[in-house]
Image 1 (spheres, helix red, strand yellow):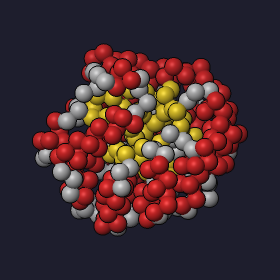
Image 2: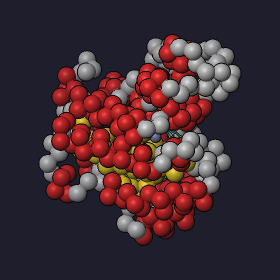
Image 3: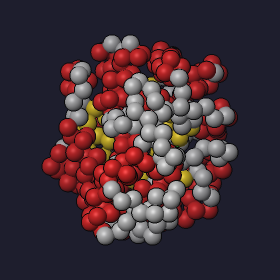
Image 4: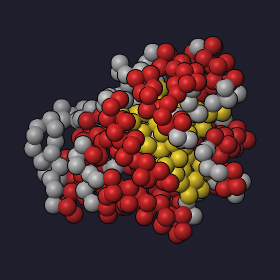
Length: 350
Ligand code: ES4
Ligand code: ZN
């Protein structure tokens, strides 16, 4: 729990958390020991010889708000550490344990409902089967609902640094599990990868009745054109939510457009602190909120941001944006309103 009783107590909905963002060094180590499969450090080509060594390489944060920074030569880049970590997942039990790790945290934080991203391409490239992955997730999802009273849905993301053809292949394969999937997203490295590259598969998903969202501006400013596409042209008229997009705050036309379309935005403060000055981050979050945009606060990748979950993200937003308790309540309500759960469940979440 945080030091803030109000934040601890309110019922929460989280709309932006990657299941792979839960893969801590400790979980990776547990899976690799259990499966008898060493974890190779891509920088040296040698297996990590201890949990401590693995923990060090995993620490990709920049120093800010008192974070420790690991400056060793062997510290991996964020994407190396993140996508490399998928290799540790081998069995259905691993996928189940991973998801249960999130659900247990969620229950302890009074999270009642979550929409959880997963990146199938990051798993299939290490040979994972859809069945291993999805049955592990499914079992955990059912267990969490019954035993922990945490409901959830899955958002399948395409890796934007992979090809549109790969996205389409994975889309087709996922249709077998469509009862678990509430929406389609776009994530991974945004450099030179505008959302429009994925127009065809997004359009197809729209026609098939999926809700749509896309990451933009992940942590640092990318061309505002990316946000423009997501807001107005993707899938023949724009997506249903935007993930991040913080730097729209610097463009009054974009702010108006997002407002006119009444798009929800998922905002993950700890992700931005890695790259952008604190003042700028929190001024922009405050500006979006004050403009009347329905922002929601979420965690993104807790295990990669010094163990910061949705409640820690709410805490830092409250502190640096000076949100009052009733404004925190509005942020929590925004998450319920912007969620893709059915109306009858929505009304029973609080
Ligand atoms: C991600 Cl682009 C990006 N940033 C942070 N976490 C992520 N997970 C997947 N894509
Ligand atoms: Zn994300």
